[in-house]
Length: 496
Ligand SMILES: [Zn+2]
Image (cartoon, rainbow, N blue to C red; front, top):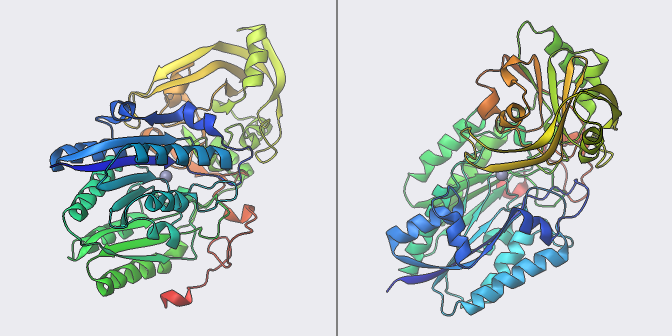
Protein backbone atom coordinates (compact mmCIF):
# COMPACT_ATOMS: atom_id res chain seq x y z
CA UNK A 1 0.00 0.00 0.00
CA UNK A 2 1.24 3.49 -0.78
CA UNK A 3 3.02 5.09 2.16
CA UNK A 4 1.41 8.26 3.49
CA UNK A 5 3.80 11.23 3.48
CA UNK A 6 2.89 14.56 5.06
CA UNK A 7 4.43 17.57 3.26
CA UNK A 8 4.74 21.03 4.78
CA UNK A 9 7.03 24.06 4.79
CA UNK A 10 7.81 27.54 6.07
CA UNK A 11 10.27 29.56 3.98
CA UNK A 12 11.86 32.93 4.81
CA UNK A 13 15.30 34.45 4.42
CA UNK A 14 15.44 36.85 7.34
CA UNK A 15 17.60 39.97 7.14
CA UNK A 16 17.96 40.91 10.80
CA UNK A 17 19.56 44.22 9.82
CA UNK A 18 16.48 45.28 7.82
CA UNK A 19 14.09 47.61 9.59
CA UNK A 20 10.52 46.58 10.31
CA UNK A 21 9.06 43.21 11.25
CA UNK A 22 7.66 40.47 9.04
CA UNK A 23 4.12 39.55 10.07
CA UNK A 24 1.59 36.98 8.92
CA UNK A 25 0.32 39.35 6.21
CA UNK A 26 3.70 39.15 4.42
CA UNK A 27 3.25 35.37 4.03
CA UNK A 28 -0.34 35.75 2.87
CA UNK A 29 0.74 38.41 0.37
CA UNK A 30 3.46 36.21 -1.17
CA UNK A 31 2.74 32.50 -0.65
CA UNK A 32 0.31 30.84 1.70
CA UNK A 33 -1.20 27.56 0.60
CA UNK A 34 -2.71 24.63 2.39
CA UNK A 35 -4.71 21.51 1.56
CA UNK A 36 -5.38 20.70 -2.08
CA UNK A 37 -4.60 24.31 -3.07
CA UNK A 38 -0.98 23.50 -2.23
CA UNK A 39 -0.82 20.81 -4.92
CA UNK A 40 -2.80 22.88 -7.42
CA UNK A 41 -0.32 25.78 -7.05
CA UNK A 42 2.88 23.75 -7.19
CA UNK A 43 2.06 21.05 -9.79
CA UNK A 44 4.62 21.13 -12.62
CA UNK A 45 6.71 23.89 -11.03
CA UNK A 46 10.45 23.94 -10.38
CA UNK A 47 9.93 24.10 -6.60
CA UNK A 48 10.59 21.71 -3.71
CA UNK A 49 6.89 20.78 -3.50
CA UNK A 50 6.67 20.43 -7.31
CA UNK A 51 9.72 18.13 -7.36
CA UNK A 52 8.40 16.05 -4.47
CA UNK A 53 5.05 15.69 -6.28
CA UNK A 54 6.77 14.34 -9.41
CA UNK A 55 8.86 11.91 -7.35
CA UNK A 56 5.79 10.80 -5.39
CA UNK A 57 4.11 9.61 -8.59
CA UNK A 58 7.21 7.68 -9.59
CA UNK A 59 7.71 6.19 -6.10
CA UNK A 60 4.02 5.57 -5.36
CA UNK A 61 3.95 7.82 -2.30
CA UNK A 62 0.64 9.24 -1.16
CA UNK A 63 1.38 12.90 -0.36
CA UNK A 64 -0.84 14.49 2.30
CA UNK A 65 -0.81 18.29 2.15
CA UNK A 66 0.13 20.43 5.14
CA UNK A 67 0.84 24.05 4.31
CA UNK A 68 3.49 26.06 2.51
CA UNK A 69 4.09 29.60 3.74
CA UNK A 70 6.75 31.83 2.17
CA UNK A 71 7.47 35.55 2.42
CA UNK A 72 9.93 37.66 0.41
CA UNK A 73 13.22 38.30 2.25
CA UNK A 74 12.67 40.98 4.90
CA UNK A 75 13.21 41.79 8.59
CA UNK A 76 12.77 39.67 11.71
CA UNK A 77 9.56 37.59 11.78
CA UNK A 78 7.19 38.36 14.64
CA UNK A 79 6.89 35.63 17.26
CA UNK A 80 3.10 35.56 16.89
CA UNK A 81 3.25 35.12 13.09
CA UNK A 82 5.68 32.22 13.31
CA UNK A 83 3.77 30.56 16.14
CA UNK A 84 0.58 30.77 14.06
CA UNK A 85 2.26 29.09 11.06
CA UNK A 86 3.81 26.32 13.16
CA UNK A 87 0.54 25.76 15.06
CA UNK A 88 -1.46 25.49 11.83
CA UNK A 89 1.09 23.09 10.34
CA UNK A 90 0.89 20.88 13.44
CA UNK A 91 -2.92 20.96 13.36
CA UNK A 92 -2.88 19.74 9.76
CA UNK A 93 -0.39 17.01 10.74
CA UNK A 94 -2.67 15.91 13.58
CA UNK A 95 -5.68 15.89 11.24
CA UNK A 96 -3.81 13.84 8.64
CA UNK A 97 -4.19 10.63 10.66
CA UNK A 98 -1.62 7.88 10.44
CA UNK A 99 1.52 9.15 8.69
CA UNK A 100 4.54 7.08 7.55
CA UNK A 101 6.97 9.91 6.82
CA UNK A 102 7.31 13.71 6.61
CA UNK A 103 8.88 16.13 4.11
CA UNK A 104 9.59 19.63 5.43
CA UNK A 105 10.66 22.51 3.19
CA UNK A 106 12.68 25.14 5.02
CA UNK A 107 14.99 28.03 4.19
CA UNK A 108 17.51 27.54 6.97
CA UNK A 109 18.07 31.26 7.56
CA UNK A 110 14.72 32.00 9.16
CA UNK A 111 14.99 34.20 12.27
CA UNK A 112 12.08 34.95 14.58
CA UNK A 113 11.85 37.36 17.53
CA UNK A 114 13.33 35.40 20.44
CA UNK A 115 14.07 32.37 18.21
CA UNK A 116 17.32 32.66 16.23
CA UNK A 117 17.00 29.00 15.18
CA UNK A 118 13.37 29.04 14.08
CA UNK A 119 13.81 26.36 11.38
CA UNK A 120 15.27 23.96 13.97
CA UNK A 121 12.40 24.67 16.39
CA UNK A 122 9.84 23.94 13.65
CA UNK A 123 11.49 20.57 12.93
CA UNK A 124 11.62 19.75 16.65
CA UNK A 125 7.91 20.55 17.03
CA UNK A 126 7.02 18.24 14.13
CA UNK A 127 9.26 15.51 15.56
CA UNK A 128 7.56 15.74 18.99
CA UNK A 129 4.21 15.00 17.38
CA UNK A 130 5.39 11.81 15.61
CA UNK A 131 6.33 8.29 16.74
CA UNK A 132 10.13 8.22 17.19
CA UNK A 133 10.77 5.97 14.18
CA UNK A 134 8.82 8.06 11.64
CA UNK A 135 11.40 9.39 9.16
CA UNK A 136 11.60 13.15 8.52
CA UNK A 137 13.52 14.66 5.58
CA UNK A 138 14.00 18.42 5.22
CA UNK A 139 15.22 20.67 2.41
CA UNK A 140 17.07 23.98 2.82
CA UNK A 141 18.25 26.92 0.71
CA UNK A 142 21.89 27.35 -0.38
CA UNK A 143 21.85 30.48 1.84
CA UNK A 144 20.97 28.53 4.99
CA UNK A 145 23.00 29.11 8.14
CA UNK A 146 23.15 25.47 9.20
CA UNK A 147 23.35 24.52 12.88
CA UNK A 148 23.64 21.34 14.94
CA UNK A 149 20.06 21.81 16.18
CA UNK A 150 18.72 21.98 12.62
CA UNK A 151 20.61 18.88 11.50
CA UNK A 152 19.44 16.99 14.59
CA UNK A 153 15.80 17.78 13.76
CA UNK A 154 15.57 15.57 10.65
CA UNK A 155 16.78 12.09 9.68
CA UNK A 156 18.27 13.56 6.51
CA UNK A 157 18.49 17.02 4.91
CA UNK A 158 19.01 18.17 1.33
CA UNK A 159 20.20 21.66 0.32
CA UNK A 160 19.99 23.54 -2.99
CA UNK A 161 23.19 23.15 -5.02
CA UNK A 162 22.77 26.23 -7.21
CA UNK A 163 22.79 30.03 -6.94
CA UNK A 164 20.95 31.60 -8.67
CA UNK A 165 18.64 28.83 -7.44
CA UNK A 166 17.31 26.66 -10.25
CA UNK A 167 17.41 23.15 -8.74
CA UNK A 168 14.59 23.39 -6.19
CA UNK A 169 12.53 20.79 -8.07
CA UNK A 170 15.46 18.35 -8.24
CA UNK A 171 16.18 18.78 -4.51
CA UNK A 172 12.51 18.27 -3.61
CA UNK A 173 12.59 15.03 -5.62
CA UNK A 174 15.89 13.98 -4.01
CA UNK A 175 14.39 14.54 -0.54
CA UNK A 176 11.37 12.39 -1.49
CA UNK A 177 13.68 9.61 -2.76
CA UNK A 178 15.72 9.66 0.45
CA UNK A 179 12.54 9.51 2.50
CA UNK A 180 11.28 6.62 0.36
CA UNK A 181 14.49 4.70 1.07
CA UNK A 182 13.94 5.17 4.81
CA UNK A 183 10.26 4.19 4.62
CA UNK A 184 11.21 0.72 3.44
CA UNK A 185 14.14 0.08 5.77
CA UNK A 186 15.34 0.94 9.25
CA UNK A 187 18.54 2.42 7.83
CA UNK A 188 19.28 6.06 8.55
CA UNK A 189 22.34 7.98 7.36
CA UNK A 190 25.03 9.26 9.72
CA UNK A 191 25.08 13.08 9.47
CA UNK A 192 28.25 15.16 9.77
CA UNK A 193 28.08 18.96 9.88
CA UNK A 194 31.22 21.07 9.62
CA UNK A 195 30.90 24.81 10.20
CA UNK A 196 33.53 27.30 9.07
CA UNK A 197 34.22 30.73 10.62
CA UNK A 198 33.65 32.08 7.11
CA UNK A 199 30.72 34.15 5.81
CA UNK A 200 31.12 35.14 2.15
CA UNK A 201 28.60 37.71 0.86
CA UNK A 202 25.99 36.29 -1.58
CA UNK A 203 27.54 38.33 -4.40
CA UNK A 204 30.51 35.91 -4.52
CA UNK A 205 28.55 32.70 -3.86
CA UNK A 206 27.44 32.14 -7.49
CA UNK A 207 27.80 28.42 -8.21
CA UNK A 208 28.34 28.81 -11.96
CA UNK A 209 31.47 30.92 -11.51
CA UNK A 210 34.84 30.71 -9.74
CA UNK A 211 35.59 29.97 -6.97
CA UNK A 212 32.34 28.19 -5.91
CA UNK A 213 31.85 26.27 -9.19
CA UNK A 214 34.94 24.07 -8.75
CA UNK A 215 34.13 23.43 -5.09
CA UNK A 216 30.57 22.33 -5.93
CA UNK A 217 31.97 20.07 -8.70
CA UNK A 218 34.34 18.48 -6.20
CA UNK A 219 31.43 17.90 -3.81
CA UNK A 220 29.32 16.27 -6.53
CA UNK A 221 32.24 14.01 -7.43
CA UNK A 222 32.66 12.96 -3.80
CA UNK A 223 28.92 12.19 -3.60
CA UNK A 224 29.49 9.40 -6.15
CA UNK A 225 32.31 7.72 -4.23
CA UNK A 226 29.89 5.33 -2.55
CA UNK A 227 28.37 5.15 0.92
CA UNK A 228 27.41 8.85 0.67
CA UNK A 229 23.65 9.46 0.58
CA UNK A 230 23.92 13.20 0.00
CA UNK A 231 26.29 16.13 0.51
CA UNK A 232 25.38 19.83 0.60
CA UNK A 233 27.27 23.06 1.08
CA UNK A 234 25.18 25.89 2.53
CA UNK A 235 27.09 29.09 1.84
CA UNK A 236 25.15 31.02 4.49
CA UNK A 237 23.18 34.27 4.67
CA UNK A 238 25.46 36.88 6.28
CA UNK A 239 22.69 39.44 6.89
CA UNK A 240 21.57 37.58 9.98
CA UNK A 241 23.18 38.39 13.31
CA UNK A 242 23.00 34.84 14.69
CA UNK A 243 25.58 32.68 16.47
CA UNK A 244 25.40 29.96 13.80
CA UNK A 245 26.16 32.33 10.89
CA UNK A 246 28.46 30.98 8.19
CA UNK A 247 29.32 28.27 5.70
CA UNK A 248 28.16 24.77 6.64
CA UNK A 249 29.12 21.47 5.02
CA UNK A 250 26.68 18.60 5.54
CA UNK A 251 27.62 15.06 4.55
CA UNK A 252 25.31 12.09 5.12
CA UNK A 253 26.28 8.49 4.54
CA UNK A 254 26.30 4.90 5.75
CA UNK A 255 29.81 5.06 7.19
CA UNK A 256 30.37 7.83 9.70
CA UNK A 257 34.17 7.74 9.31
CA UNK A 258 33.92 8.08 5.52
CA UNK A 259 31.30 10.88 5.76
CA UNK A 260 33.55 12.69 8.23
CA UNK A 261 36.56 12.48 5.90
CA UNK A 262 34.50 13.88 3.01
CA UNK A 263 33.14 16.73 5.16
CA UNK A 264 36.58 17.61 6.49
CA UNK A 265 38.11 17.54 3.02
CA UNK A 266 35.43 19.90 1.67
CA UNK A 267 35.74 22.17 4.71
CA UNK A 268 39.50 22.45 4.28
CA UNK A 269 39.15 23.05 0.52
CA UNK A 270 36.81 25.98 1.14
CA UNK A 271 38.83 27.34 4.04
CA UNK A 272 42.05 27.43 1.99
CA UNK A 273 40.28 29.35 -0.79
CA UNK A 274 38.49 31.85 1.46
CA UNK A 275 40.62 34.72 0.15
CA UNK A 276 39.33 34.07 -3.40
CA UNK A 277 35.79 35.04 -2.36
CA UNK A 278 36.58 38.73 -2.76
CA UNK A 279 33.69 41.07 -3.50
CA UNK A 280 35.99 43.47 -5.43
CA UNK A 281 34.03 46.58 -4.46
CA UNK A 282 34.71 50.03 -5.94
CA UNK A 283 33.84 53.33 -4.21
CA UNK A 284 30.70 55.11 -5.47
CA UNK A 285 32.69 58.07 -6.80
CA UNK A 286 35.22 55.93 -8.69
CA UNK A 287 32.51 53.60 -10.02
CA UNK A 288 30.44 56.43 -11.51
CA UNK A 289 33.59 58.07 -12.87
CA UNK A 290 34.71 54.95 -14.72
CA UNK A 291 31.20 54.22 -16.02
CA UNK A 292 31.04 57.75 -17.52
CA UNK A 293 34.58 57.40 -18.94
CA UNK A 294 33.95 53.97 -20.53
CA UNK A 295 33.94 54.12 -24.35
CA UNK A 296 30.81 51.99 -24.71
CA UNK A 297 27.77 51.10 -22.64
CA UNK A 298 25.78 49.87 -21.00
CA UNK A 299 27.97 49.67 -17.93
CA UNK A 300 26.08 47.99 -15.07
CA UNK A 301 26.52 49.62 -11.65
CA UNK A 302 25.52 46.98 -9.14
CA UNK A 303 23.99 48.37 -5.93
CA UNK A 304 24.16 45.04 -4.11
CA UNK A 305 23.69 46.66 -0.66
CA UNK A 306 20.17 47.71 -1.74
CA UNK A 307 19.30 44.28 -3.22
CA UNK A 308 15.54 44.31 -3.79
CA UNK A 309 15.44 40.51 -3.44
CA UNK A 310 17.48 40.35 -0.23
CA UNK A 311 15.37 42.38 2.17
CA UNK A 312 16.58 45.89 1.21
CA UNK A 313 14.09 48.69 0.42
CA UNK A 314 15.34 49.32 -3.17
CA UNK A 315 15.14 53.06 -2.58
CA UNK A 316 18.85 53.68 -1.88
CA UNK A 317 20.11 56.98 -3.28
CA UNK A 318 23.91 56.85 -2.98
CA UNK A 319 24.53 56.07 -6.66
CA UNK A 320 21.81 58.47 -7.89
CA UNK A 321 23.39 61.34 -5.94
CA UNK A 322 26.76 60.62 -7.55
CA UNK A 323 25.29 60.28 -11.07
CA UNK A 324 23.69 63.73 -10.68
CA UNK A 325 26.89 65.20 -9.16
CA UNK A 326 29.05 63.95 -11.98
CA UNK A 327 26.44 64.92 -14.64
CA UNK A 328 26.14 61.42 -16.08
CA UNK A 329 24.39 61.03 -19.47
CA UNK A 330 22.11 58.18 -20.57
CA UNK A 331 21.99 56.71 -17.10
CA UNK A 332 18.94 54.93 -15.67
CA UNK A 333 18.07 54.03 -12.09
CA UNK A 334 14.92 52.52 -10.58
CA UNK A 335 13.79 53.52 -7.08
CA UNK A 336 10.84 52.22 -5.07
CA UNK A 337 9.12 55.38 -3.83
CA UNK A 338 5.32 55.35 -3.78
CA UNK A 339 5.15 58.83 -2.28
CA UNK A 340 7.12 60.45 -5.12
CA UNK A 341 5.02 58.52 -7.68
CA UNK A 342 1.90 60.03 -6.12
CA UNK A 343 3.37 63.54 -6.45
CA UNK A 344 4.17 62.87 -10.11
CA UNK A 345 0.75 61.36 -10.78
CA UNK A 346 -0.95 64.46 -9.39
CA UNK A 347 0.74 66.76 -11.92
CA UNK A 348 0.97 64.34 -14.88
CA UNK A 349 3.15 63.62 -17.92
CA UNK A 350 4.88 66.69 -19.39
CA UNK A 351 4.93 68.61 -16.11
CA UNK A 352 8.12 69.41 -14.19
CA UNK A 353 8.66 67.23 -11.13
CA UNK A 354 10.39 68.82 -8.18
CA UNK A 355 10.70 66.85 -4.97
CA UNK A 356 12.70 64.43 -2.86
CA UNK A 357 13.12 60.88 -4.13
CA UNK A 358 14.27 57.67 -2.42
CA UNK A 359 15.87 57.16 0.99
CA UNK A 360 12.53 57.27 2.79
CA UNK A 361 12.17 53.76 4.22
CA UNK A 362 15.12 53.97 6.63
CA UNK A 363 18.36 55.86 7.21
CA UNK A 364 20.67 53.05 6.02
CA UNK A 365 20.57 53.54 2.22
CA UNK A 366 21.35 57.24 1.73
CA UNK A 367 19.08 60.27 2.32
CA UNK A 368 16.18 61.45 0.09
CA UNK A 369 17.63 63.31 -2.92
CA UNK A 370 16.12 66.52 -4.36
CA UNK A 371 15.25 65.82 -8.00
CA UNK A 372 14.05 68.19 -10.71
CA UNK A 373 13.02 66.94 -14.14
CA UNK A 374 10.27 66.38 -16.68
CA UNK A 375 7.76 63.59 -16.10
CA UNK A 376 8.04 61.56 -19.31
CA UNK A 377 5.90 58.53 -18.36
CA UNK A 378 3.19 57.90 -15.80
CA UNK A 379 0.79 54.96 -15.58
CA UNK A 380 0.34 51.67 -13.74
CA UNK A 381 2.64 48.88 -14.97
CA UNK A 382 1.84 45.17 -15.00
CA UNK A 383 3.68 42.56 -17.07
CA UNK A 384 4.69 38.91 -17.35
CA UNK A 385 8.38 38.00 -17.20
CA UNK A 386 9.67 36.89 -20.59
CA UNK A 387 13.29 36.07 -19.58
CA UNK A 388 14.72 32.69 -18.56
CA UNK A 389 14.35 33.40 -14.85
CA UNK A 390 10.91 33.05 -13.24
CA UNK A 391 9.45 32.99 -16.77
CA UNK A 392 5.77 33.82 -16.91
CA UNK A 393 5.66 35.28 -13.42
CA UNK A 394 3.05 38.05 -13.19
CA UNK A 395 4.54 41.31 -11.91
CA UNK A 396 2.61 44.31 -10.66
CA UNK A 397 4.75 47.40 -10.06
CA UNK A 398 1.75 49.56 -9.19
CA UNK A 399 1.82 53.17 -10.43
CA UNK A 400 5.05 54.22 -12.18
CA UNK A 401 6.55 57.62 -12.93
CA UNK A 402 9.66 58.25 -15.03
CA UNK A 403 11.51 61.52 -14.45
CA UNK A 404 14.10 62.83 -16.93
CA UNK A 405 16.59 64.82 -14.85
CA UNK A 406 19.11 66.03 -17.46
CA UNK A 407 21.07 62.92 -18.45
CA UNK A 408 19.68 60.74 -15.68
CA UNK A 409 16.42 58.82 -16.09
CA UNK A 410 14.81 58.01 -12.73
CA UNK A 411 12.07 55.38 -12.77
CA UNK A 412 9.95 55.57 -9.62
CA UNK A 413 7.81 52.57 -8.70
CA UNK A 414 5.18 51.82 -6.09
CA UNK A 415 6.36 48.21 -5.65
CA UNK A 416 9.95 46.93 -5.65
CA UNK A 417 11.25 45.94 -9.09
CA UNK A 418 13.47 42.83 -9.06
CA UNK A 419 15.87 43.23 -12.00
CA UNK A 420 15.86 39.60 -13.18
CA UNK A 421 15.30 41.02 -16.69
CA UNK A 422 14.74 44.43 -18.34
CA UNK A 423 11.00 43.91 -18.79
CA UNK A 424 10.20 46.51 -16.12
CA UNK A 425 12.27 49.11 -18.01
CA UNK A 426 10.68 48.17 -21.34
CA UNK A 427 7.22 48.49 -19.79
CA UNK A 428 8.01 52.15 -19.06
CA UNK A 429 9.44 52.77 -22.53
CA UNK A 430 13.10 52.56 -21.49
CA UNK A 431 15.41 50.65 -23.86
CA UNK A 432 18.06 48.99 -21.69
CA UNK A 433 20.49 48.33 -24.58
CA UNK A 434 20.52 52.06 -25.49
CA UNK A 435 21.72 53.20 -22.04
CA UNK A 436 25.27 54.12 -21.12
CA UNK A 437 24.79 53.34 -17.42
CA UNK A 438 22.24 51.05 -15.75
CA UNK A 439 21.97 50.79 -11.96
CA UNK A 440 20.66 47.41 -10.71
CA UNK A 441 19.62 46.68 -7.14
CA UNK A 442 20.52 43.00 -7.05
CA UNK A 443 23.36 40.65 -6.01
CA UNK A 444 23.75 38.28 -8.95
CA UNK A 445 20.23 37.66 -10.27
CA UNK A 446 20.68 40.61 -12.70
CA UNK A 447 23.46 38.76 -14.52
CA UNK A 448 21.17 36.28 -16.27
CA UNK A 449 19.72 39.01 -18.49
CA UNK A 450 21.97 42.09 -18.50
CA UNK A 451 25.34 40.36 -18.96
CA UNK A 452 24.35 39.33 -22.49
CA UNK A 453 24.62 42.93 -23.75
CA UNK A 454 26.47 44.88 -21.02
CA UNK A 455 29.92 46.25 -21.89
CA UNK A 456 31.06 46.25 -18.29
CA UNK A 457 29.98 45.78 -14.67
CA UNK A 458 31.08 47.41 -11.46
CA UNK A 459 30.11 46.25 -7.96
CA UNK A 460 29.78 49.43 -5.94
CA UNK A 461 30.64 49.81 -2.24
CA UNK A 462 27.32 51.31 -1.17
CA UNK A 463 25.78 51.26 2.31
CA UNK A 464 22.74 49.08 3.01
CA UNK A 465 21.31 45.98 4.62
CA UNK A 466 22.69 43.70 1.87
CA UNK A 467 26.16 45.27 1.62
CA UNK A 468 28.86 42.93 0.32
CA UNK A 469 31.30 44.76 2.58
CA UNK A 470 30.39 42.89 5.78
CA UNK A 471 32.59 45.16 7.86
CA UNK A 472 29.76 47.70 7.57
CA UNK A 473 27.61 45.62 9.99
CA UNK A 474 27.72 45.29 13.76
CA UNK A 475 27.42 41.63 14.73
CA UNK A 476 26.67 40.96 18.39
CA UNK A 477 25.93 37.21 18.36
CA UNK A 478 29.02 35.82 16.63
CA UNK A 479 31.98 34.13 18.22
CA UNK A 480 34.78 36.07 16.52
CA UNK A 481 36.86 35.94 14.43
CA UNK A 482 34.86 35.24 11.26
CA UNK A 483 36.35 35.90 7.82
CA UNK A 484 35.92 38.39 6.12
CA UNK A 485 34.02 40.28 8.85
CA UNK A 486 37.33 40.11 10.66
CA UNK A 487 40.54 40.09 8.68
CA UNK A 488 40.98 36.43 9.44
CA UNK A 489 38.90 33.68 10.94
CA UNK A 490 40.12 31.01 13.29
CA UNK A 491 40.07 27.39 12.20
CA UNK A 492 37.84 25.77 14.81
CA UNK A 493 39.61 23.31 17.13
CA UNK A 494 36.93 20.66 16.55
CA UNK A 495 37.77 20.59 12.85
CA UNK A 496 41.55 20.30 13.32
ZN1 LIG B 1 18.82 31.61 -1.33
